[in-house]
Length: 199
Image (cartoon, rainbow, N blue to C red; front, side):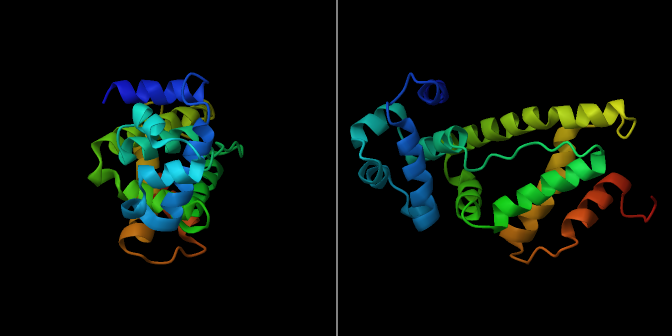
């Protein structure tokens, strides 16, 4: 299993299948159309025009293939904001997460992909890498907040984002409730100020 992430990274930098992006695009398109249960390596091969033996050579399961597609595709990319304040940056980040979870076409990819993590150890490993990359990209946002005196230097950026993104995930995927217009602002306020009403 440890060999596959290295191979998928090589594929993105030109050392893997020549049509890696076509494979990734076909994988995410089929996931959106058929869900994780309906996603098959054979279907990806047919959609991408790449022989399935080539796909299996690089990704031995559909979980590994989907994980590589999540890392290698730009469909779920969020650009870290710089609004000039921690509150504004967190609201922008959370609004982006909400969009990924609720708005097509990204929602049809993000929700089933993240929901399938418990079914595939290979996919789980790639998803960990996906979120590690995300938090690394977002780190400057928190560094700026510390420099402005808005955030304690010992604050945990990953915990803050887990609280915010987790709230959105529970509301959308588990409770299956709509996200209200005030959800983002209220969630960020609660994380930054607590639920006691202070601040």
